[in-house]
Image 1: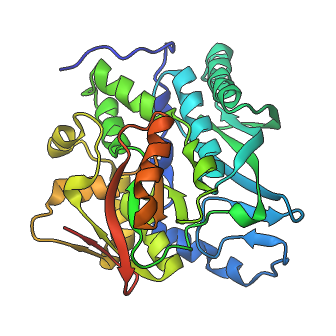
Image 2 (image 1 turned 45 degrees about the vertical axis):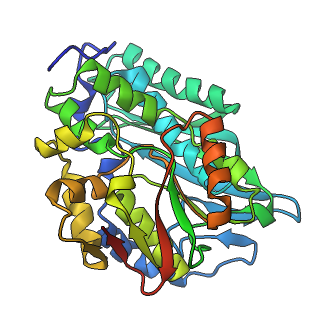
Length: 353
């Protein structure tokens, strides 16, 4: 099963981090407590999207034609190859702009490195990886900030533009909408297997292909009036980010477990026990708002809460445009995009069958 994973590093980057990728996120319940006091601060009328619904980015109206999207994301290594680490972190950060329906315009780099332990060449390769993704997105890295850190940290501040009337949030879904997921689940499972030396070269390639694929369909989805809500699935797993849509839109969600796409070999690896600690923390944070059918076992639950580093877009749209949404995904290379459920009137809960 085991075969060597390509790496340009003489040291394992993951050995420096206590948790990798979006699995480093603070648990949902703890984060809610931390942010509780910030919700009473004054909000300017130009701020169209803030922290109220835990959306993917802030949006600030500049004028009648333009709104600025501002977001940031950074984390510790999820892989040992420095170039791949840089690519994953940059893709993850920029994708939040697409998740708001916007187009990125520039980025700032956030860099924290243990300079007494990592060779300059390795740090340089991390930055090169991030630059390659920014180039693919058509934006410059216009600046940034660096610190000497105990653990390697890399990410971006990403800025974008969107028409104020085309902003897509996680709070506009409607009863009767169908749910479409743009990328397969399982990045957390693959990363857990990688850390324990149980991921083969094909599995590694699958993980890298998914985590470095920019969520560009978000730009086109912004122009469909029947797309009512949009977010991306990252560290809180599918259930966590779907619950944000449910709470923001005051709806219930119904998922069909058999229709949820998974990365190759993920089900087998999850069954074998390659689960991240973040998966369990996620369930503890929001499991009380989820109803699992009798046939949904521990493995399926772990996949539903699996932290997705640079995960896919989650779309709530009118059923009449579901085929059009799927065609947009497929035209941009997201062949695994699929309808996974629906939204109905009811309390903010998720039901899985």
